[in-house]
Image (cartoon, rainbow, N blue to C red; front, side, top):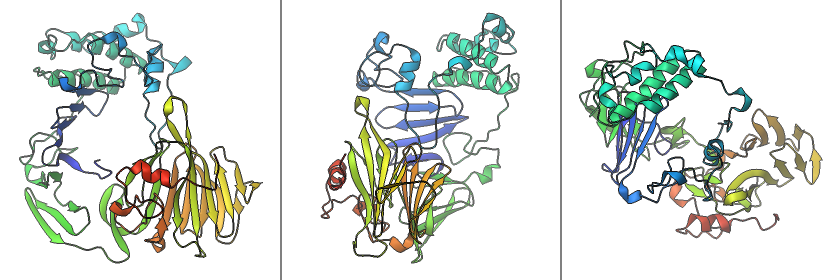
Length: 448
């Protein structure tokens, strides 16, 4: 996925400034400025950066200053007391995903007695065997850590074949990245993988399964797509289809009046106009038309409203953003929604107020407006034309129907299909600094 849109590899973006390719099971991201990321799609990630980044890095990979004693540094610049604290401090919030910082009392116990059966060449032992498939790699990439991790992981999984394959794959990937010659290991380890090499691409395995060579697909404007697949231009005025290997046919297109060019399920095309504006837990806003901005300070902010304040279906949505420790921001502590006939306040703890009075849910405010509990939080609905979701994790989503296209104001944009005119101040100014635009929409009638 690149910029929210699904693509099939390989991808050559911005005239070679960014390459995303696949070699075997490995996904490789290469930038013209020198950094490379390799991911084996299982459990191994390798990040390489040029020396110009020395001393300027942070995160789980350390600061790259030549001193390993200060690598376990927290975002606030202090050294972590232990590995759990270090890992948890760099956790990135992702919508709909949650994970614990540690396994606590549920951590599996794998002592030397329990790991002993997995030291043979039938299991993890093939990693350290000098005469095995990785013997030529040992001087380039030490096998000791991979061997230890393999013993623990396979033991914790009660000898599961999948865990063994992941562990060996991780070392195989590291060896290949180091330039070592790796012998055949999949058959002996019962870790079979299917792969084909396509003539139009610089590497193998662009398909998740083996296909005939004449079904390998096409490359157009740096993007690869399979036979039978079509790609729309960014504004959907051109549709290109892969009709046969390396043969692309393009035609002019135009979305019908009731549709717009947008991403649906991460695929671009003409879709019935329905807008979604999203504010993530980390205070990142994405407008109805796809513009993006990051809030930089706490407060209550207007995110969207009907521009015509006299319209019967007028509404205004505001969101509270709070500052936490270490200068991080968190959204969704409270959402304020104003209608012509009522005002609603909802919080992530489930408490709800309508016109200043606490209410139990579900609650019907009028024939058009309701507040209900849903599986992932609270839903405020206005005749199904506008819906505000406050998710339990603090994410706020506003969805609107095509009827409101071009009639909206606020950082969520006007929902006219053009992302370039979304981030404007209340008086219509366009500013280079999006943070200034967001600050201009700070609610003046709701105190912090």
